[in-house]
Length: 70
Image 1 (cartoon, one colour):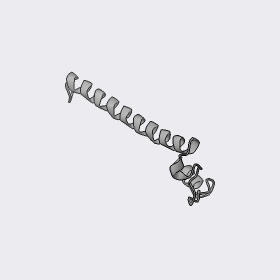
Image 2: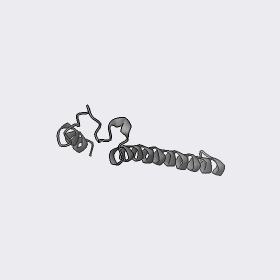
Image 3: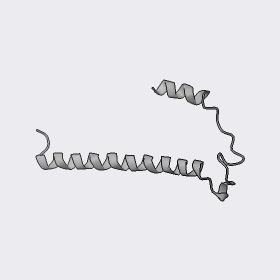
């Protein structure tokens, strides 16, 4: 028994706060992406992807790297 009951509760709260902060980070990240993609503003020319941006082919190297990660 390396930790007291009070310390264990603190660890649980800390892990819960960490996980919730990660969830909020990813929600904000995807929110920003979908907001930009589905409702492009005049600042980027009103189109998605913005002009002068060349999109990467999804089934090339990104697909291979995703398979390696999985």
